[in-house]
Length: 335
Image (cartoon, rainbow, N blue to C red; front, side):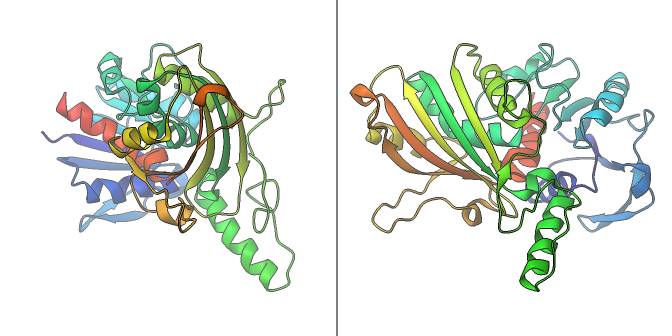
């Protein structure tokens, strides 16, 4: 089955990744609308050998559209997604606008694809750090419920968009040339540095990225009681987030069982070579669909073998954003 497809925010980093993955996966569509802000109106984009003209995103953009992939920012999603739904489209939204709305499914296809059927016109794509972290945790949680997660993220510049990626490149060049780096996109120097994630701090001292990971995981797992704490850091890597994840299980969990479960898990590649000290790195995950898992080891501070540490790497622009949304769209077509 093919569909009439629209992409809102096509000129951004995730929008461009949408196009790349749609082509790679040969996503079936009859027509395609490419939408962006007024600044990009009239630009041309070549996709699958055909030239498309970027149209301005308006409330009238979705006539005849079946599926609309949104990555235009939360405020634009709130403004234009309802218009898309009113026109008859199903919106798969990559922003935070609807994720915690109890009426909107929050979906990772490897975890809760059945939630897609509950949509009322909008399906939310989780945050990048949430997706990358929980794809490998889910099969473990199913086998032996996780009581507590402690997550530390090491997040690439790509998470802040194409402009942040360019800033990392420019700052690196300037510093190596002996020039003073300029901060125009991110609040602090990203080249040769790391800092607290650049989302707003709440009154509890946690930044928005950390609280997204906590709240979204509970919703996707349908497990409001799971204890989660997170620390999210921005690092000078172009793309692919890494995460250190400490898990406390209900029952003892052997490393052999962890490896068996992860080896069979969809969307997961185990890279755990202790002999050569070779574990997942951003360069392994960049451009690839799977979340890579390694550093699988017992948490010796917990009794009875109930604690396990893992290290993961996943491409923020792919599985952390565009790929997950397209997988949702593929499920919609199947349904």
